[in-house]
Length: 196
Picture 1 (cartoon, rainbow, N blue to C red):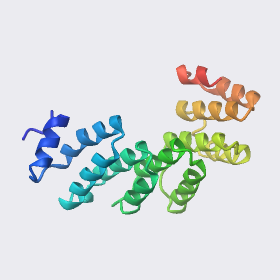
Picture 2 (cartoon, rainbow, N blue to C red):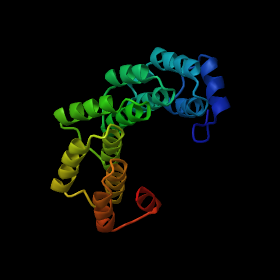
Picture 3 (cartoon, rainbow, N blue to C red):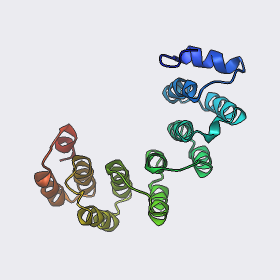
């Protein structure tokens, strides 16, 4: 079966026939279940993934972490993450984002600490998620420490981080700090202006 243009129905049909399918077949299914927030269907696909040995594909499993997060099932997302082969920055950041979006920012911060302990690389998106966690808990001191980390590594002025910092300081009631970051931010976009 041609995998380049696989849609939801074709993927579901192939899975229901019990045939061995390529890992790319799972992506349209998982995307559909994100839209529908369908936990039961996600669990059925998850079982098929394990049964067929596709759980060794880290990209399929990272997608599964994302689906469980969007279905507000962080315990399942965490379980999948815990068994994930070859964790990378995308998987770590995805788990953190899931916790922030599911009103568990304190857990997202713990995940970040674990990420630091194993010396995993962080991206601007990782820091954006972290600043969001800090602002939701009004952790100004921790947010400033993370801001210092960004300054130390010369990434403070990246647009994504600058926007996240503006948003963080604004939500924490530190408008002067937010404006200072905004003025230093070289590449401003809609998010930059909205944060202020």
